[in-house]
Image (tube, rainbow, N blue to C red; front, side, top):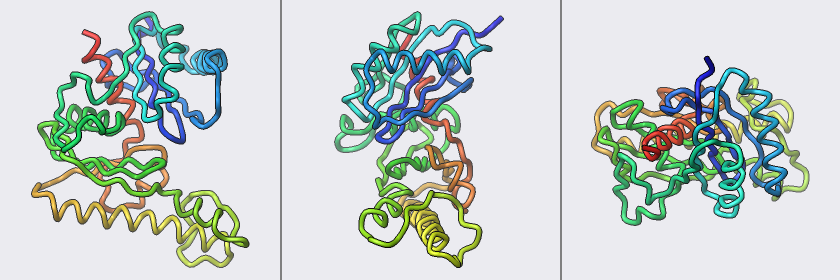
Length: 262
């Protein structure tokens, strides 16, 4: 018998990631990434999402719950309506006000983004130890989470592709290249030089910030987890990253949905 599931949406500044998860939130059954920046009506969202579900969810059962985590307020109302037309149960939006089994231990807790809240929740439930979650997306965020599930703060840095964007905007002759691991450090063509410089600048920045956090945070045996859209590309090249978990935020959404829908 096909398993009942929940539909979650992680709305970021660049991409929105939809996922089908088990009702417990521990298992990611399917996921799809679309551009957030493309204007879409409710009908367009509905058609797109239904086509994705039809193509990739043959092994799942009814969708009992919808869960949204968003850092783009302009998309929230539309997505709530779209998910409400697809799922059989409630649609829940996770915010800093949500009653979750974590503590936001910073000076302005209501300003903490949903993605960082969800990373905190997933890290607490999955690892149960002091953790630095490095979320490699439009921005690179470093979330410091204690083993008790307290988000104690972190770092927000330019995203790993920021160097590519800056070079494309600010130079007349340098071409735009894709963000990818270079074949070798020393480039022999302009494109290879750019790719190497941007890639290893991003690697070095993450290494340095993780090292500084560890020096500042009196914690022994801190786990470093890489997540986010660029994690599979850059994570394996960062020596300080212990694990690469691209769907950690989706798992946080699923766990939040299970906790709040009781």
